Length: 222
Ligand code: MG
Ligand code: ZN
Image 1 (cartoon, rainbow, N blue to C red):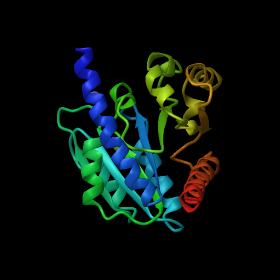
Image 2 (image 1 turned 45 degrees about the horizontal axis):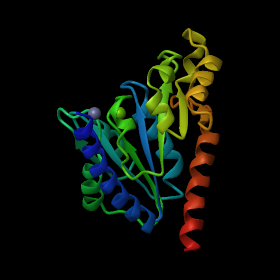
Image 3 (image 1 turned 45 degrees about the vertical axis):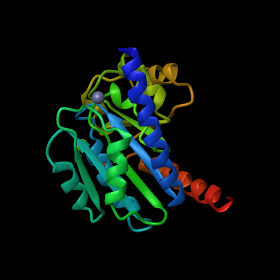
């Protein structure tokens, strides 16, 4: 069982490196958005795109078991989105993303957001070729999620604590949630945001801009 799993992941890592090479060549800053179902990923993505799209090309890959609902919400913002339906599968893998990248018209420089299937378990193990995994935790969930699903919060470089506009109405200890996340991953960057009101988006957008700028710099230097 363990040998089979290692074999699958080794194959995946090979495809992920191909994706990463293509994205580097195109100077595309790719983020893999992971969370439980219902954390507000798509709403957060729509607001992020609305802020970014006037200054930089944005492309989106949407992963869900069924429906093209989220890709349609993204396309309504005016940016291209390709929906992958995984059927019985509970995560995207690098082979699926590679096929999507070949099918899409990728710009030269810009952002690629990959919205993974809502699942805090196996997407942690599957590298898609992204620059960073971004974990989204919402204040309607438990503060102990990072402790329950440590692999995901360790694999991520950023945590967005979403739905912060609801804090007056829910029992959620922000300090405890952040402390739990940092216990699992001390280098995690944490942003408290609300996709509904835009609270905290300045810092999140500044982080995205600096990532894209750093990528352009390394590409320029060789
Ligand atoms: Mg979604
Ligand atoms: Zn899975």
